[in-house]
Image (cartoon, rainbow, N blue to C red; front, top):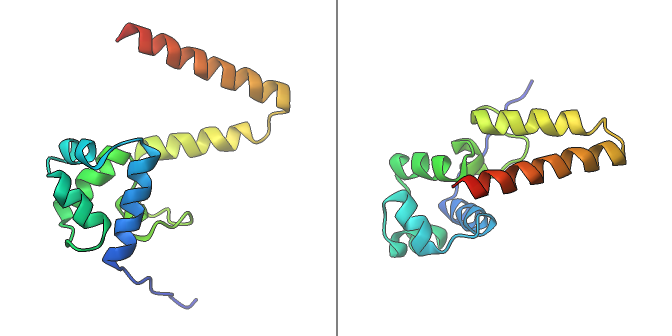
Length: 122
C-alpha cells in the first residue's frame, strides 16, 4: 500500500478555523476569549498570517470538540484522533441511519426536548 502524504498549509488551517468558528456562531473576539488569545490573533490565524502553536491547536480542538488532525487537514476521512464526543456522535449517526422516517422524527423530537429541558435548568 502506497502512503499518500498530506501537505499542511497554514492558510488552509485558517480557513478551517474560520469555518468552525462560524459553525459555532462565534465572533473572533468570542473565540479569542475562549482560547485565551486576542481577537487580532484569531483574525491573523484565519488569514494565514500567524503561525499556530501546538498550544493554540490543542485549545481550538477543545473549543470545537474536534481532533487536531481534523483542524489541520479538515478531512472528513481523517479518523486517527477523535474526541470521545465525536466518536459518540458518529455512533449515534450510524444507529440512526437504520431508522425509518417516523422513528427518526421520534428520536429527534426527544433530543430536542432534552436540550430544551437542559437549557431551563441552567
